[in-house]
Length: 282
Image (cartoon, rainbow, N blue to C red; front, side, top):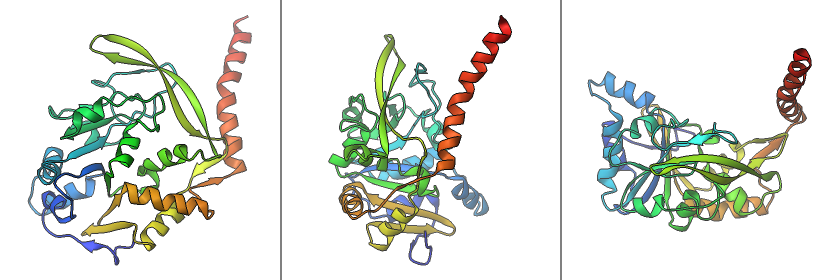
């Protein structure tokens, strides 16, 4: 992000939410790395807490909804997802929010989220076999014109919504992969069939040109507090522009033979290890 073009924010970390132009009834997806915000607060003699960070948004969104990612995309076929104990892979904020009494976690074993606010129950009740399906949290955010705020996190690794769009439009460089996952509920453990729209071998995410275009076209708004960059996106507007971007040949992926070879070797090694072990045991 070019900080020269970004709107400059001032004041405490707890004042950020009130400077973004959010409406009180907005639905906001918040992806944030608060490390530099915490260091800034310490420098200024202020105590930073994740609860204070979250509460600052809930105050602004007093008629709205706040969503925080709680992804566990490290789980593999056959693993068990427990919403109460499966630790998110999405950073310190997610793991702190997990302790909040007002945050309820959805039951998607790969891309669960914590939900607080007005539409909490509606989101928690969403069900879709596809983790990026029409009735997933991503489909909900698209239909309901949600916004996404990315705070000091690389767009390349945080804009998961793009994978929902890739599945929505059936992009050919991805393919459906089905997983059998176990989900632990209060009533016991149940098996769930899940579908993940995965990259084909050799394909990598590459959102850099796409991000530049979104910024150059004014589709996203950028902010900065000292050295902490932020991007605010209206997901419905982004989806509309992304359709145009794809139609005229824009890409959010790249292909590499080297990546393909590495992927095939990674998949083959466990098989070879098993074969060699079985021969050694004879």
